[in-house]
Length: 233
Image (cartoon, rainbow, N blue to C red; front, side):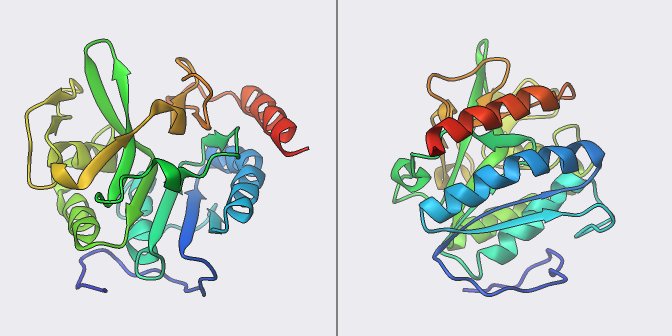
């Protein structure tokens, strides 16, 4: 399955070894530093659960320099799905702290797209910091529509805002009001918050901790890496 796409091509190729890929990329000094800390956790997780891993520190390169860096994940996921049955994206400012759980056990087999919606007071905010897509026509269609939803290219939430709008959530005023079902809403299921746990409001027994927002603390991320090591040794 390799439908026509408006999404730019990748400037590189690689050969898959497993059916699933976990991937990330980083640009900018802060995210590059965080990727150095989180990368060993991703590589270990992939090896433990028989996945491939692709981590791209890109200090002087972009997949599409015409857009903010967050949009590069859409390009990478879209093309990776032509090689893998399942692709899991994890932001460079997130770290796996409990590698024992296989995320595939949490996926709905009838649904191709999975992510976490964070609860905040009386609203839910879908978050693309951890984003799982299966090779499926619905995944390709959603990724294409996210890319082509140009209203949100420079939105504060970038590709996340486009996804939210396409699955029935209102991102324009940051209210995240749920408007109701849309064309793509049936393709998306929400995971438990342990798969994308906020640093400031951690889930019980988190698998992945996400350092959301501007206040990203490298020391705390390093501490989480030390906790990760307790699950390994």
